[in-house]
Image (cartoon, rainbow, N blue to C red; front, side, top):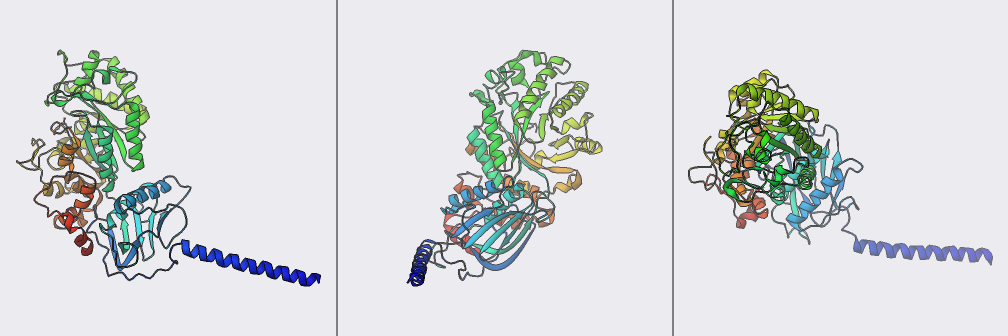
Amino acid sequence: MKPFKLIFTEKKITTINLVITCFLFLVFSACSKPEKKRIINFPETDLAAEHLIPKPLKIVSSKNGFPLDAFTSIHTATGLEGFTEVGMFLAEKIKAKTGLNLPVNKNKTASIISINQVDGASTDNPEGYQLIITADSILLNAPTAAGAFRGIQTIRQLIPETSDKTLAKNEIWVIPTGSINDAPQFEYRGAMLDVSRHFFSVADVKKFMDVLAYYKYNTLHLHLSDDQGWRIEIKSWPKLTEIGGRSEVGGKSGGFYTQEEYTEIVNYGLARHITIVPEIDMPGHTNAASFSYPFLNGNGKKLEYYEGTKVGFSTFDTRKDTVYAFIDDVVREISALTPGPYFHIGGDESHVTKKEDYVYFVERVEKIVQKHGKRMIGWDEVATANVDATSVAQWWASKENAEKALAKNMKVILSPANKAYLDMKYDTLSEYGLHWAAYIPVDTAYIWNPESYLPKKNILGIEAPLWTETVSNMEELAYLAFPRAIGYAELGWTIQENRDWENYKVRLANQTFYLDRMNIKYYPSALIDWKKQEDREATDLMD
Ligand code: TNX
């Protein structure tokens, strides 16, 4: 009897197992997403650059579709700095655009977006990336988290505005298949915001950075001090903000960032792979500092708040050691809060500083910047001093100064005012802006070749500065910055032979939907045939 009993028991167990297995299978199949292989018949769509800015290096289309939908999950390289964060960032942006809540690094699903670390993925550029899009996966390969971050901007731009409800029972955002190999042409792609002439809140700066990140900028230069206001807390010199932070153009209350707020901006940048370059403009443009601490003043005049827009009347006293002790504290405190490699010392328009004093000043301050572990950037005038090859000159006005910089083997950032200044009016009818350098309509801003200024090897990159004498809030900022800043993004990223105004114009027109979603009130230049909200579906079909 015993063996029989045993057999019976085994049988019973086996049967129970079977029942449980079947039950589990049924539960699993009912709960789980559709089986791995889904057959969806996509209409033939081309992977093209119609929605992409900056235009990538190389695109190959394979005329099928990838279904971005509720059955998509995101997977990233783990244990490597920054990759998981890039995946989470993408999930957040996909949610904002489509409402889809994609899991990150959880179970694999029917379609996957996989973000991987691959050395030399596209080129050997650290910000390069490669996208391989097939009917069930998007592989994003990049050597660094920064490269992966640039790559997910391309994915965001490839997601259509509207979903398709006819291909399956659920909504699908169809991404065309193919491959993209991409890398930037310049390592420095920046915008500058002058928060001194008018102060801008942390929230405004963050919003500006959101849009810059979408177009693959990697640098935001903050002009933190000028005659009209000092905008960053310096713990060892508190009057700089207590007194110097209280004014701005037009006399309004001004403002400043506490060190915690500045750190918040820096960290927001880090999450977007955007480096903050802090600028303390000196020895000119220093009325606010000297009004706070009169021993700094070198122009011999009685000090008061300055709320106008003239330039060139102020200077530090360049021959006092106490002035350099002050600068040492300022550079030390700001550098300690700034992970990026640069410190910008301004150095422009020091019209009331004697030439030899100016040169002496720049050379001494360069050493202070280096002592605190940073590389000095200065407006092109700094190249008139005997500065190191490691320092960088920012061309805004003078070819002659830029040539001096080249002779010293310095790298140059291109910001020629008549092409790249975001504060220049578009045309005579522009609501805001100045026009001392030029009127810069949207086409002029785009149609210029950085290499016609300097050999490529000497160009660190390009930067579009937004001086804020005439703008005081986000809406006015957006009017001057957009759409021109989008064109500068392409100038900094895309090689000359891939740039063409007629082609860019169409891609720019397609940015309406993103800019509207971001509530960015761009200047609706008549040169562009802007898409309208009712064109959303038609734009998707165009691809
Ligand atoms: C020149 S560009 C300046 C700024 C003004 C700007 C206005 C430069 C280095 N200096 O102080 O705000 O023009 O466009």
